[in-house]
Image (tube, rainbow, N blue to C red; front, side, top):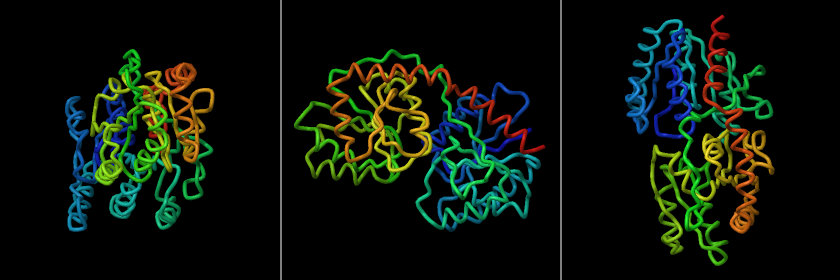
Amino acid sequence: MRVIQLITGLGGGGAENLVYNLTKMNLQDKDVEFSVVYMTDKDKLKPRFEEMGVAPVSLGITSKGSFVSGLKKYYRILKNNKGAVVHAHLFHTLLISCLMQPLVPHKVVFTLHSDFVKKRARRYILFFTRFLRSADVIFSAKSKQWYQKSDAVVIANGIDLSQYNHAHNKPEVFSCLFLGRLEEPKNPMYLVELVNKLKDKHKFKIVVVGEGNMRQPLEELIAKESLQDYFEFLGFRQDIPQIMANVSCLITPSLWEGMPISLLEAGACGVPILTTPVGSIPIFLNNETAYLTELPDFHLSLQHIIENYNEALDKAAKFKNEVFEKFDINKCYQNYKAMYYKVIK
């Protein structure tokens, strides 16, 4: 069986890392053959694929002018891989798969990677294209939305636990890690408000790992508020386990989410987690294993963690046990493999 992992780009977000880890697992599987196709020219993760002998193919869609040529390239890929299952990740990949259906009929598995779609038009597109999809993947039963297939398959995310064997070191200065795309769903601009509310109470810093279109506005706001000493920008990084091992906690003030890989990464490292209770997060985390707090009280929870860090470490230890028990990428891969076989029957 052949499976085309189709994703918007290889920019290093949670969806991209899931595709990477699934592909890595697939190299040990003689029954299923993966190929990786991405729409745009964002390719920060491409070298990691190439290091393990996988050559991702870009459709080169970077503007309206290159859209048609990208579709033609995708058409040729589908023609050369007749019978393959296309696993479309994120909204835009679904659009081009739907456009290709009349020309090259194929099975489509779709993962939205979010429990919330902001634009109404997109929600209706998802609803009216349900018949073109063989399966929808969601992260928890409670996260299913009206625009998804009624028999959506629940598959939780997973991570390569063998990479998370670093001892957790308590840094000299309390360090809060913000890990993710610097874009609206992740709510990075809130970090300035957070610092302003706590800077007179505690000594701490925020380590920002990730890139996105809100990095420049964020840095400009930090400069305007004269808060440069409270922030450290590391950009896009691939050594997340090592970074996790040297921070005090993970903060996730997201406006909406699916099931963030970063929470599993923090859990695997025994790092305390402070997050908003959005998306599927409350399905996998609770107040016994993390701090789930709405934005108005987010700063109070961070203050509590700083002042009661041993309590936070105890919660983190409980979640670490759960991560190693439930969220191994091997289990995740086997669940996807079973679903791929099911849709081609």
